[in-house]
Image 1 (cartoon, rainbow, N blue to C red):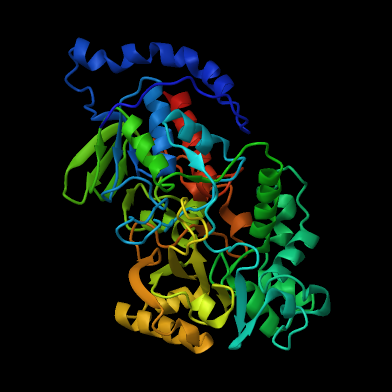
Image 2: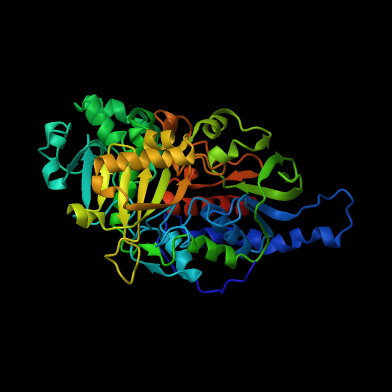
Length: 503
């Protein structure tokens, strides 16, 4: 790997005081080189042979952040990555695939994403303006409900609006969020409280909560099961998770930092981190099995090559971990967590507009639909011409994404296009299909990001990241304080410090 340029670490706010933590572990680290060098100095026939001090499985943000932390403290670290790229679910489309290279994975960077912004600065990635993906600019959206094209101004009193009287304002998805905001019992600025057993009574389905607030089946379907950014439907997601999200959003809004998006795409950040890592990264190396032993851990790749290390850090999503043989097996609640944690379905169909359909019918270019078109968004990703529509995406979540992803590719495209043209005739012959992306059947993801079903937070949120002997775990699904990309960074840092304290 290439060598990164060293720079002074910018002091940023974090819930964990990293500098103080490293001070506390400094004594152990100063003697570590002598310990690691014993095999080469002392003849000990029975001494274990290791390929690394730590093997990190996964070259996403969590794995890269952990690996860099461990490397900077003098440890011998190897990263093992199943795919041919860096970033995991941070994935930017190639310009040759989709003009404007939109994000296929993680999109916005909040102003409070201290660890991620710190890494971008440290490794030379410029942060530019936020690039909207599923939320258009003001005045550029239509609601396509029951084949009616409705402006936001007309939605509140429209016959197709099924919401209770107190929740008719806003977008079709906003009423559910209004309920979450009204009911949120978590203390403000407390980003840990969501895992407190005191709030387990709220670990219930969104469906049940909305029913109690007087929402009809139709209203629940529209506001919480259509184009939902999390889960598959209102019955399969815990409202306690939404309370956590609200607290995180509040914390981000209060941050003095400046977020946005990486120039050239967010994938440039993990690529820069990987370039700064000085030791080995094994790409295209899927893992077949992990065996914990008394003095180390063995990792066997699908090509049957085996590597040994004193410790292993698994940063893979639970959905990918289910494909790997673990020995010994996790027990109790942790085993259940790895087996049952689910990931948000997400499929995307990308198009290039061949004509300005929005000028033809005189309506905004983007649509929030209740049909197979999902959130159909006109993206404007040309910094030199910010009003130019560079591409369009049918961004599918919920059960719609699952249904589309089960189809043959050509059948899925035909079904989505038929739905779009039926709702909006000006789209006929207006779109050139260029790229399909799915996170659902991706063997190393299983979905876009983790979500908690009713009862799961109270049952195993406290257990999912517990070390299993010399095997440690990270990944956005194990984060406590943060979510998304910042949650991945947080989890990698936490797991690295766990290992440091053991060494």
